[in-house]
Image 1 (cartoon, helix red, strand yellow):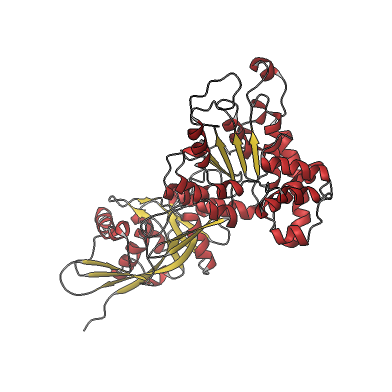
Image 2 (tube, rainbow, N blue to C red; image 1 turned 45 degrees about the vertical axis):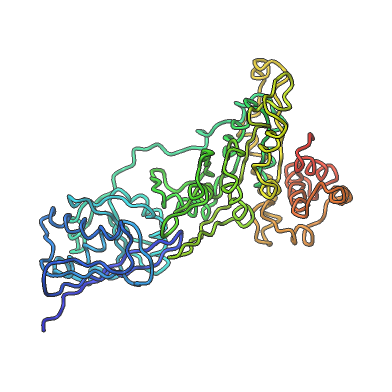
Length: 508
């Protein structure tokens, strides 16, 4: 009995942000022509048999006329996506003698094949290569169009290929494709929207600054046209740049949805604003077998803005409870449980009623008192209780043209104060393992950090039922942020009073 030709290649299975190495085995047997793919492939991966056969035929390399068995190991691990194509043709080609099987040792192959033999880009390249490096693989073969993204990972040798012919040339010792110079202009924070464009609303701008300085969640209430959306859009512009670790994590999440890294890693906090018709999977992530990231994960280390918050489904809004508290979202499926990071700043915006004119001087509201109450209750109490700052915006009382003509503070100046406040927090909290005030646990707030002076203010608010136990911690975090902006070492009674007012949505 003759020995069955066998070869092995390597790829990566992604489950959320985590990657597991997959050994792709190809064996050519005896009998009638057929190709069998085993190892829990999904529909897109199962179709790779036909893509790979057609691509090999187009490149005039042919496909075995004997039965081919392709095994994706470990077999118990669900596998999804089209990035296995390159490793499948490499293993089959090595089994046929198109290259030496040992040329595949220690080499990870990622890429989708076109029917004409071209190698196309795939999603999740960055987290896949990061996983390969963690498992001690230091050589990867990727589509030529994604060499720039692959080179963002240090400690790995990257080879790009444009088609199957070039793939086997590389496996026989060829150089591979050269990365084309990028023609895109590097992104800059100056392209972000400036806070100086917002006329008036000084109190709301101050609330935005406090939110940025401490990483606090913000709820903007007010009638249409007062600037709620304008303020939310300018929050990323006053946030500091991402650290190297944050940039790598944020970029890996965006790689899963096909983001193109023309300018390197994502260095600025992302801004995500889904429409109020967004479904549960669109907001928190989901999928049939292995979940994909949703808006809460795409906003990781940035801003998630939900405009017209009461118009969102209450069930969808309540799904925010877990990421608001834990900074991650866990999505369970029968095949696998996926965990995505989701530490974002939530900004909600809401009108006072469905028509938006309730409690507006000189306006006629057409909504009944019952409709106003129902509208407000669409954002549940538990979600509201997780919001640090509640800010009411009022229409301008002066001529809009006069207010707009006045000089307003630009984002660059506000951003500088935010950066200094963040540095104070980082220095104070470094030994405790926190980055900013919003992350500090209640136990640390009450036992390891000095309490503000005149703590009776908090006790009185609790006795009157104005603050919950969670609300007390929120107020303490806010008071520390206000103190950091003021350059104070410990929050004073004035800082505490301001924090209570911001928490309750009162005028300061």
